[in-house]
Figure 1 (cartoon, rainbow, N blue to C red):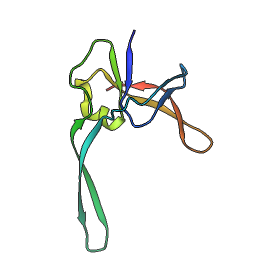
Figure 2: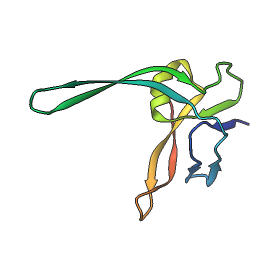
Figure 3: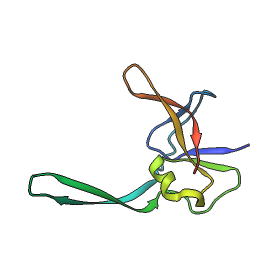
Length: 106
């Protein structure tokens, strides 16, 4: 049986199974640097540069999977088949996310 660890900053509920994955206390993130260029007309264009992934265990364990943000998932790519991000998010009447319909991998 798979063991799933939530490395996001909020609980994640799989609406198809009813399982809610609580926060683990560790949040996987991607280090970012923002650059900008300003033009004479007052327009500014920002560019985000993505760096190292932090908060993600480097030792993979058989049967252990990690829920991470889409940004983290895209940063680790196919090198980390043990990582997945919520997919098909569902919002409630107040427009807040109430859960997801499943998970995606790269």
